[in-house]
Length: 109
Image (cartoon, rainbow, N blue to C red; front, side):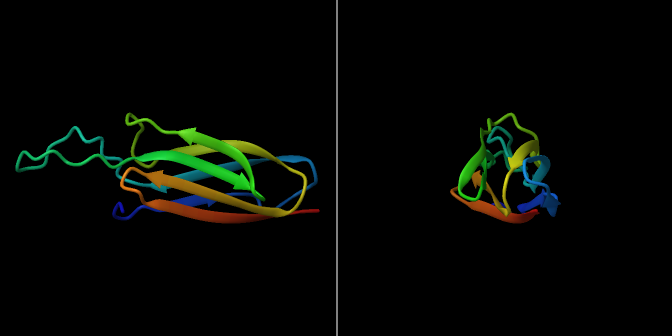
């Protein structure tokens, strides 16, 4: 598990039925490419977030494959149409097998 990996999400608290809402996500993560060496000349093992998904009430909204050239602290901004109240589930997958998750609810009415 990467040290200090911290997911953050921003989802509106409320929306009207059929609204398209803006969602912002960021995960604090070093994103080590596996090509750098430490002070002793040893290769620093690769550790990147390689996949990001977002589901709303069990339905996939976005699924992103992330390549090694991505920057530190990957940020995603996207939209989703909401017809009912529910919960967004955000999941980040790390090369080392770690999975980071965050959730956010929205009230539609």
